[in-house]
Image (cartoon, rainbow, N blue to C red; front, side):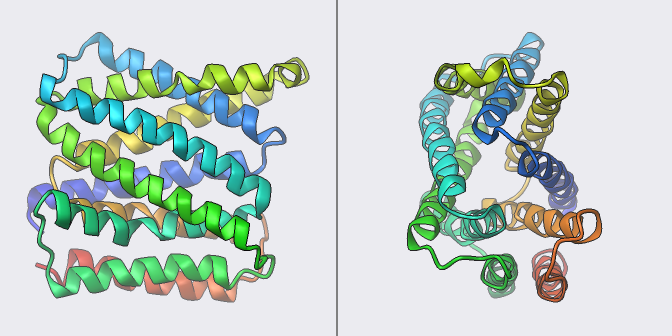
Length: 283
């Protein structure tokens, strides 16, 4: 990879860390739907701040912004359904692990991005390592509805990743594109908060702060990923981004004492090999 791709890799790794952090916060939240609404509220605030000093994105990029907003609404819905039907340790790895190959395929179909054999091997290894976190979990349930909802969540993740990767390249203003995307997609917050309005009064001040901080982390994570799409191909970006599941698993093992740890360490090795194939052996 060239210098721009190396910068993109560092940005995506930072995004993975931020994503794993806010996901760990969400995992331990009592009111998950309300917390997601607060996180989305944080998205909107970050978007407004970005727009204060940003040039407007080009006219050609607006259809992509609108499409991404709609896809994000489906993403929030499928994610909530997945969490209602299955365990977080089962649903999240399946949803995130199914995305890289779908994104790489989308980049090949819609952006004419060609990847070498080693890059495809790396993407496959990262996906396999992440999927092991779900299939090898002691608490995983063979609930077909939960797995189906998680796979649909992964499809929406892949869809908005490809749409935003293409749209930001046409925008002429990555900051403007990201700002308008965050500001408009946060509109789903009002629907969720209206549905959950009876529970808002029972939340502590700490819960509100946690939701806001989680929203800032989440917005920062995806903002870095979108900007990285202007520097490197979509497939490798998505694959390295999904190392957030690995980071989250390590946080669970080290900080929260989650088990089993052996399959998670093995998954870490597989994901690491995949990243090496993408960043070293694909040069």
